[in-house]
Length: 302
Image 1 (cartoon, rainbow, N blue to C red):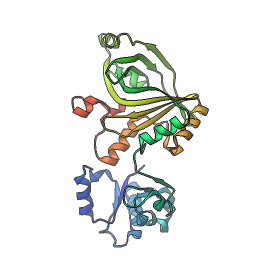
Image 2: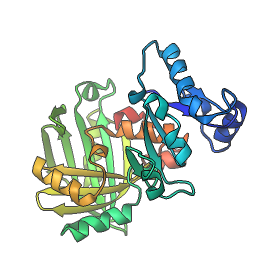
Image 3: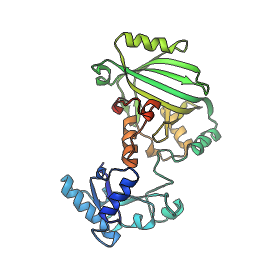
Image 4: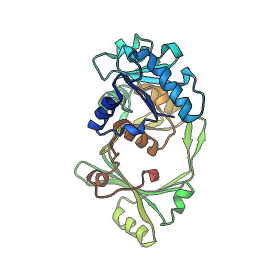
């Protein structure tokens, strides 16, 4: 996917506005601006030509998606057949934007627009909440990264109540992942270490393992028939929803969530991090240590 910028602002004005909110203008590979043409409907074709020259491939109109928050944004590429997605972050409502023929309309561009609303939907569908609190993961590898090279995961996972006490803890191993249709699958083994997770962490360190990733988030976890639905809120990143279970259970849970089906993918956490950082211009923080600046891990290990 190539990210471009299409705006009625002049080039210098567009750069100034992006930099003012901490977004690097250079993340946009191509663009078209008000300084290129005074008429907005002419800009998509200009961006299309520049993308063709820059990337060396012919990009057809239907392969281009324009994202905007006004009717003018959504209409501007119709002459070359681009698709449009509406985002109601301005003065126009989702209904206003849907009336312009957008292929999809969202309240905003977050992965989960309103966590409380989506949680309420699964509760109304009969989901039973099994945990609410803090979920901490510490992922381990050898110094040569041999586990990551084999797509294996070794971690200690701790569920903490609001008072910080460990309610449950486990050491987990995951084998290499694969896709079964649109569902991710992998072999997993887990053992309870709730009695003393800190001592087990020390054992791993004595055996030569090092922490390669810390992930801390507030979670709300539910059982919904044959699926587990977990809502996750990170220190600085988009809210996420993870659904696990049988294919039938997963599909029922997604239906209850009321979110677009194509927003559920088998992608890994680093892909969500990349999109968050590209959209906001801010570095994601997946742990308390990363938020404070005390630690910085390679997010590809997430």
